[in-house]
Length: 391
Image 1: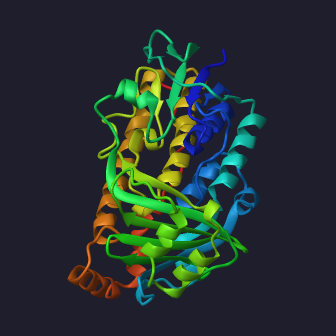
Image 2: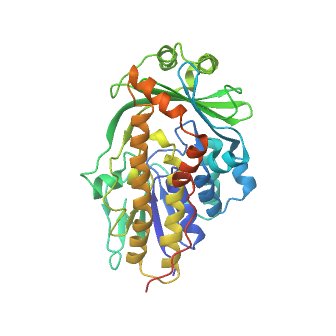
Image 3: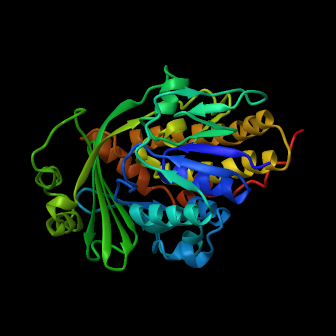
């Protein structure tokens, strides 16, 4: 008997979940509230754990390489361009902090094509206004009038699934907003470059040989309205290092996006209830200071198939499979969320004056090898084996 799943949300977490479940033989429908598909975003640095998740979803090395530009994390500079901590381009560093600069739209289109090729049905313009989580050992779940053996809550930071099942867990404004854009041309260094200033960070990342992603992450009151986003970004980062000025000068006004940054402190108390499993920002939305949002969304999606889809398709019970997913994913995602908060306090969230001077001196004394080793906790993740069925 074919098991059925409804995935709520057609973003990175939702499509990766759909692919993973379909690969184990489930019949999958993705429902998306937007009238048309399309990732709202610019770029991101795809770390090696994200690459491992993509390979687990069935993408070979060539398919992964076509997503973007192979590079590495080059380190951090102060706002004037003086190095705080730099990482050399060596085989050891590449093995530890190697990245692929990816345009989010390119990744989203790739995931969507693979999902459709696997027989996944994608239904747009469908909002989740009703949800019955069902019972893993009894009644099916019902979402948007559709019955399913499993529901995947993958509808992002403003999750309707989470609001129904976990109404006490609401996103909190971080105090920061982020400009983002993709600009034609090769701007800045070849490696991911991050500049830190008081309550601000600017990053540059190649997403192709002739295409650069940049972001400007700054303290700002929530729901600030600006008539000229690019002009405001240029004003906020006036006087910063030359590469910052150059990419801002080359950016078209209509290429600039900005969003207030929210997070979900502590994440959800558990990632499964009834027949519903939560993934991505809906489960554990974190600050962007570790750059792990898209990576953990891909990890979650893969693990839905390996830890839930596979054992249930083999005749196992759903309840222990969901418990296994929660036990595997929640500790890791909570640890990354805590690390993201700590990273922000020491980095882009740090105030000005003597704090910057002291922090920079400490960072300059840190061996690059220690940073490379420290990246193992976040980026050294490898996919688990498919779970054995529990009958």
